[in-house]
Image (tube, rainbow, N blue to C red; front, top):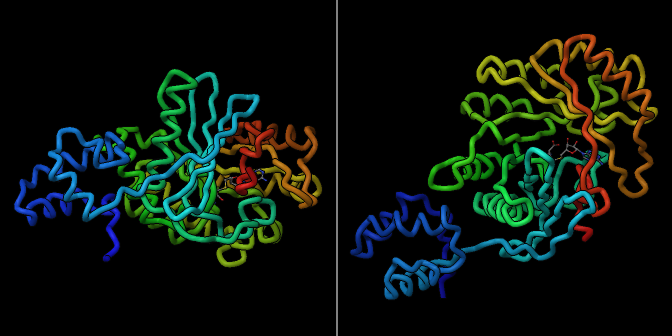
Amino acid sequence: MTQKQDIRALTKDELRYFFEEQKDKAFRGNQVYEWLWRKGAHSFDDMTNISLTTRKMLNEHFVINHIEVDDMQKSSDGTIKNAVRLHDGLIVESVLIPTDTRTTACVSSQVGCSLNCTFCATARLKKMRNLNPDEIYDQVVATDQQSRLYQNHKLSNIVFMGMGEPLLNYNNVLKAIDKITSDEGLAMSPKRITLSTVGLPKMIKKLADDEVKFNLAVSLHSAIDEIRSKMMPINEKSNLAELLESLQYWYVKTKKQITFEYVVWKGINDKKKDIEALVDYCKKVPSKVNLIEYNAIEEDGFMQADEKAIAYYVRELERNNITVNVRRSRGKDIDAACGQLANKK
Ligand code: SAH
């Protein structure tokens, strides 16, 4: 028997063409497409305005691969972490983070990660594979349903800050975002979507050339090459100067300021020279800084810096008119916070 194709790998035009080939109306393709994306059908049998014969024929040709939320954990602060099972049994995680004003979905783009940032739990998992567009889209659908159920309103924001490096799965992430923002999908505004990257200059320039409309966040953690390279080995391949050049390119093309994510660690980047380097870096491209709390992962030896050091960062950034937010972790008790996603359950 030949293997059935995943129907959601087909574009709308391909689906229309398939129906034409079956001597049916191309329009049928639109109907099925709507079921698959906007209505999120998991089975051909759900497609009630499609005849039984057609549904049977679809079943013979295709499968609908969909994710399954295998396990859902709720934090005392309302954060929900989902272990998401993919059609081939692999697991990724996605997180729903409610605040007073919004609910944010944090979604994964790869199974595991290949970048080896020393402080990140996901880095300890081998990279297994990229997620398909529908697997990314489905995480958003699942967290949106949870948001409606537990928060009484729809999802307001999406961050690509789960497992994996989104810019190493460029095409699929962009296809998923297309579906999320399209009227045929979830019709969410791209302004409410943020892609977070370790900072790959070539890919950042490609994003700019592709004129994407979503926001860009870069995990900076240090504006001194020697220190950044120790924390994030990728910095040895493309250093801070190259990164900066790509961010300036991004800004010129998109007119969107960049968010730098930054953890302050005790004894690593909590000195005056670290702060000065960050201020200098931020002055070179329109940007703001999110100081994120460090979430300890087992035996890594890193520690969050003292409050004094964080306050020093805030003061100096503000004195230089750079916007800075101090982000407290959410969902720590269930290992759902930044860098803690490691399929621990
Ligand atoms: N690969 C992407 C997205 C995933 S990581 C990226 O690097 O941006 C999401 C964010 O969590 C990044 O800013 C990352 O640096 C941060 N992070 C990783 N481990 C962390 C930890 N243990 N504590 C706090 N933040 C962490």
